Length: 312
Image (cartoon, rainbow, N blue to C red):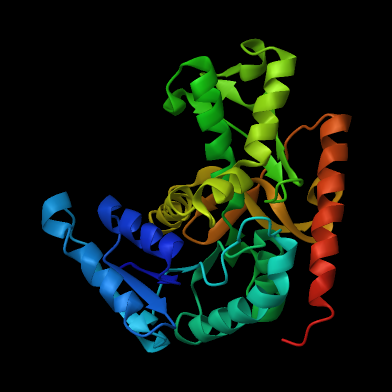
């Protein structure tokens, strides 16, 4: 019997639960939210599509009662204040750190063996916070940011090339932020051929920049953070864990010497299975790409430093 908990029944959490249910790869999804009735209502709304969409996944909701999440294989954490127009991810730290820490501690009580998938922003810092405060082994704390960033890069490339996004494999590493993520055209391919062979350097630079500000662009359009792609990205990661698929994704994980980095959670390619992180994959980066990753790591560490001033 497989079970997934999604904490936070806002737009991202509800989308994540909806995608998981419709993929029909687990027995039960539990939505949890602090707002009275919100999780119950959205869970019921999702489950009422089961006959229409043809799935058997049970979907239930709970107002802050973590006992109903007991025995979860995966806990997806979406809780926190969404980013507003003009608001940086750094500004979210003081608000979201306390929320995320409380959520994780409550969930661990009932699902001590779960893999935790982090979505809350700023994602790299919230992943680092969870690892340090929870006592969980590093293989069971994963930030999903790179999956989303790579999907956005794929979308931009597919529109430019007029190809199916299913034929693209993209790599985006580094922090999950407008100035810290690093799309890697050289290591992104169209059916095994580097996309750099199809797009001129100047245009590629524009597509890379569009990918980096993809979240901020959507925030300007929507007036709040995006939710459909982030929710679907977390669902894809949860599926890889529950189904033990051994898939390779770029995700935010703890590094201990890999890529020359230590004491940081940042995006790099990993292999994912039932135990969480099975392997951290070492890309053969050029000196320029490594320099960009080092710069990204410095920016992420500056956000992590904010945590040292807080009493959690």
